[in-house]
Length: 549
Image (cartoon, rainbow, N blue to C red; front, top):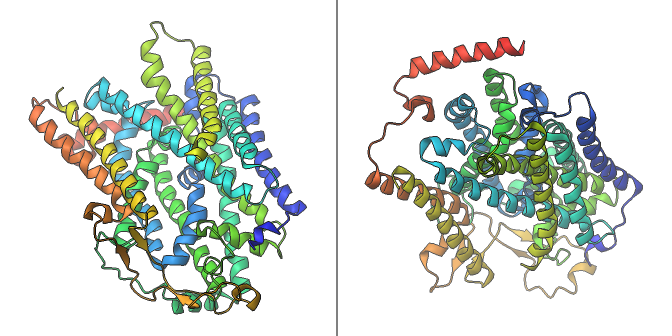
């Protein structure tokens, strides 16, 4: 029997969960009523560009780490080992890209919607095409995030998922609409703290139960989790250091570098120098918060190395391994399950609030504002933005039920964007279909039931008590499966990106009239007048600092 069926939450679990939800709403309401409440559009979207550095840092970290990372990364580390270490390493690489290439361009331009860049670089249609793709994918991502968090929490709460998840959506919508960016940032800072503390406690208590750090590492090594071919460049393995790093790197670029929500936070700081400092600490913080679930996965393996919950049928779905582990430990440590629920919800809320705030800004700036023939007043603009936040929140709440059931150079940009989306959908659906139908079979590192109690193993009818691989973990394919569907799912993002770039460049080259490109739209390393541009940037920076002071 699944132990979660016998588990009962304690008053401490309920208290921790209630405090997390209540504090998030309280912070949002406080910032909507305080003397710093947003009165203008600039204050609502950018916190009047005088936000303190620390909450922006924690907000960036909280927004970048989804609840799936907290739940799935330990599971992947448990079954596949050291490859997952390359996820936080990718965060460090993206830090350098952001610092040297993206920040100098994005903050210099200072656009409310980052897709205004596409209009300046290409044309209005390209801008709106990018905005539509961004808005649709971000709303879908926030829906998936809150759906996953709701399912995880509903596993332990005596309440229906279809009541709790929509209610959580509306709760997040309320504090996002009321508090604006300032409220969202301070709530994110609180939630990031919850995430750090929760995962750290899971790790420390787990290590103590196993017998200390050395014992955990020894078990982990004996289980073959450190036996990884770091020079494996095969595109057909499930996880390799190379494919894991590439996937994480490009996903990180999309989610934490060229992301409207993150850019809004950088623009809310009073100076460019502070934005650069925060970008460095954001990369380090993201790497740390991704590294902690990997360490947790090592601890979970050391706990169940001789009685695997999946193989012993104690756990029906191994994707719920982290939840199973915390529930199992929560029997002896009151409050542990409440912490898990709080951390998972914090990650989902942070993702959702960031998306609602940023997507509402994009829709307002790129679609509504250009279509209205008169100049909007401050109160009208604020009302529209808040209404958009509420609409997106309602879409998420209702979407939970649906998800359960189931010209010139710009021509190149458009064609590339379409091609990237099509390739991503084609490969993603094709690979997933092959896995579901059994044409692709994934194996794991070694797992065992040798240490399980007799009352668990006697009815399993297993021919072996140990399965899996100590070293190289193979993937098997049916002979009739096309090679394109044998590619690792980790490569989908990279292939889609390269498809967009290549097709975009080809069509742009064919249709281009050799238009001169504004230097301000290029990364500093490609500008013709580097020194002059940098001097101008520094002069503007001094003016901004004087104005703020």
